[in-house]
Image (cartoon, rainbow, N blue to C red):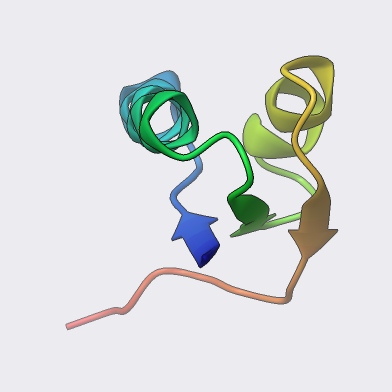
Length: 64
């Protein structure tokens, strides 16, 4: 199975996403997980420290 995880900007988004990724990995140790986030968000530092591959994409919030 392959899993794409995204969430960022604050720890309130990153840590729950990491918890879900960890729970999926416990159920399926062979799962391939990729975390996608922004280069300047907390996720850019936290996710690699947790041992998950990370890809940065350009992103910003919606206005209006």
